[in-house]
Image (cartoon, rainbow, N blue to C red; front, top):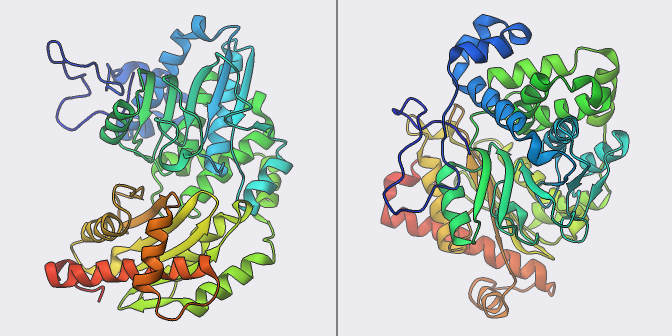
Length: 442
C-alpha cells in the first residue's frame, strides 16, 4: 500500500504502534533515484525525471507493485469503480488501468459508472467506444476492486449510491487526502487497500495513470481513442491546463496528443453540444440568484439525473462574474440537495487559505458533516466541490418555513431558495463571529 510521502520522513513508512491498527493507506517503501531514472529517464528525459522525482517515484512504485501483483491479477475479473458520474478524467484513468490489468493477465475488466451527466461525457463514451457498466448490478462477482479518480469508501462523497466493497486492490486519486481516506474507510468498515495512491499531487489522475501505462508499454494497445480520452481527462480537470496543472500534466498531454489521429479525436471530444434544457436551468438560476458582496448563490430547483452536471457549470458561470470570489449553485436532484461550489481567492489578498475556511464554515453550518470540496495547493488558490444532503422531510419543511418569504408554488425551487438563504445566513454569522475571515467577501 502506497501513497504520497509525508513531509520530513523521506518517504519511509511510519512504524505502526504496538497492537495498533495497521494503516489502510500507508506510505510504504518508495524507490530511490536509480530505478526511477532507469524507467522514466528515456521517455521523459533524465533532467525532467530528476526535477520531478518525488512524483515520478510514486508512478514507478505503482508500476512495480502492479507488476509484482501479476499472479493475483492473472485470470481474475476486475471491477474499476469511478465516481458515480463518470467524467473525462475518470474514464481516461480507467482506460489506462484496464489496459495495464489486461497486459498483466486479467481475464475480464469492467469500468463501472452510474451515470454520465454531462453531454461531453456522453460524447466521449460514444466517440471512444467506452463500454461501462452499472456499479451495482454490473460488477463482476468476486472481482478485484479498483478505483480511479475517487477514493474508498464506496457509498460516500462522489460515489454515493454505490454499494460498498470491503477490500480494495488498487486506488489512484488526486482528490482526497490520505488522512480522509484512512478515517472514512475505517468508519465504513473497509478492511484493506492493497495499493493506495491517493491525494496525488497532480492536476488530473489521468496524467498519473498515463505515466504508469507508459511504463508498461500499453499505449499502442489503447490506440488513439484511448490516448485522446486520457488527454481530455487532463484537459478538463486542469481547466485547459490553466488551473492546478503540474509539469507531469503538461508532459503527458503533449505525449498523448503527438499523433494526428489522437489530436483529431480530441478536437471532436471538445466539440460537444448541450441540451436546450440547460438554458432553462441557467435562466432560473439567474432570475433567483442571491448576492452578498463577492458571494453569489443561485437556486436552480429540480434537475434530473441526466442533467446533473449543469449544477457545477452554473457555479462556474457565477465565478466568472466580475468581482466574484465565491459562486454557489443549489439544486434538488433524485440523490438529494446538491450544492456545487467554485471559488477563487485572488481577490482576498495575501491570505489565500482563508477561502477554504470560509467554505468549510458555510457547508458545516448549512450541511453539517457533508462537506466534500477539494482545493488546489498552488496559486491561484481555488476551491471546487460542494455537498450532497439526502432528502429529509423535516429539514425540507424547516427550510420552507424559515427562509422562504414568498413561495413560488414550485416546491423544489422554494427548497433551493431556502438553502441559498441558509448559506448566506451562515456567511452573515461568520461576519459577526470573525469579521477578519470575510474581508474581501462582504
